[in-house]
Length: 117
Length: 490
Image 1 (cartoon, chains in turn orange, red):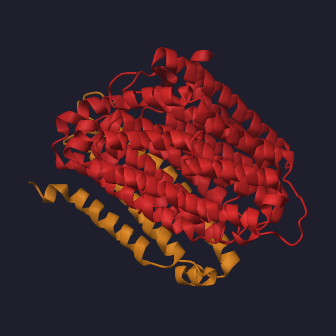
Image 2 (spheres, chains in turn brown, orange):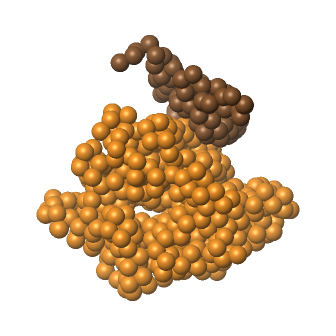
Image 3 (cartoon, chains in turn orange, blue):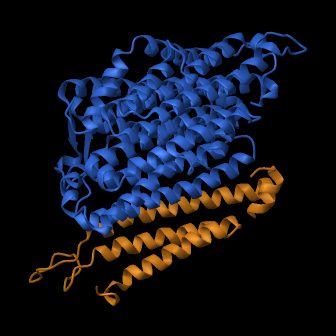
């Protein structure tokens, strides 16, 4: 197996795990959102890396070019980026409302104020 | 016109949503949303009847044939789920008029119904599409709208509940995205039919195993399979009453449908159960889910929260049917999917009416309600009996099929678990009945909910009784859907 040739995927895995870890371990709600954004971004990289074709050109029709890289994963990920932006926006809006209602965005404080685990 | 019905079912709510947000606050947004839901119900009925005759309806979007274009593909399974979702919407939206006016700020009504319509469009899209990536897009439309809807609850805990759901829901949807990406890398296609054809050639790879694992875990998070249900109880408890009824009756059900479609329609019985042994995992989690969620439900001090835990248990029953991997088991899953929507819809509407009069849904406030709101409590009792699984209600029919499925496989302990779960349901429903009927309230005034709340509630209660007695329609539809999923033809 060609380990170094898969370095895109190693980065994807590293980012994915970092994002997941930040999301789980941090009590601050904004940091949680940072974690989940990182996690989503790693998936964007996964898709974009998939479109790679060896010795291929940018997928724009040009005379004399035979091999193009695969544009479909890129198009898919454009959609997923929009979804990611929307998720972060809704998440941040909720954080603002939580701050207004509780005066804190630390998970431990919120649990204590609601007596709820 | 008629051949465009599959796409219209998605496009009409999607286009109505921005219009709704622009309408002046008051009754206008509600009228539009209700009109859309009734129109959608009519379309879903027409499509359901067409599917019964034709078997499959294929609609290529923009005229691009699959597998290059995105196709909508309706068969016995998703036509049934669409019919269920549109019926629930058409019943709950009339209820919403008074209930939402009481629970929400007046100037937010337009936005509220706009988001409800977006949720509706998302759910319809998930059901209709035959493209695995398209499912993700609609899934996120539906999920983002449900986070916003939950956050509109009056209690501030609605906000934290919505945030928790946002984190877990996004995690689940992203897991699904990773799995679909890996499958695309292996097969080069996103069309479900095409995936099902190409996947067996590459099924022996580790990538395929990983992909299925990601998708199944992601979907299990979204459908709140025990132990991935942590987002559900608070979300259901603190959301506005009408929203809880819609989410409990439709959102998780649609996710169960996606799981069925993926496990049976794309991955196939041979690979998912023969090679990956998903059925064993499902069986263990379902059994644990039925018992533990029912036990937790008994000690709740808030009735909505109790019903939310009961939902986790009922979803575990559906997964139990999947674990049986037989036509009877799947029939039970689909029947329970349909029937549970009817009973939980009715129960949460009853709670909505109680919240309308009393202002909360604490167990302690239920005292004397049997006299104070006789019709609402009667609806609660009938739907509760259905939840327990009494004969002559829909709950009995689906439990009966579950037990039949377990008996066919000789799973005697599982039969015991199903009956035990029903007993636990009896305990937690009885607890409320006892407080409502046998603990009198000081001021014995009679204060029934308005007719506009009672009528939708009783429509669902009567559906509970009707489909519990005349079972031809539901069992026939569920059985043919189960045969389609098992690949045996209609």
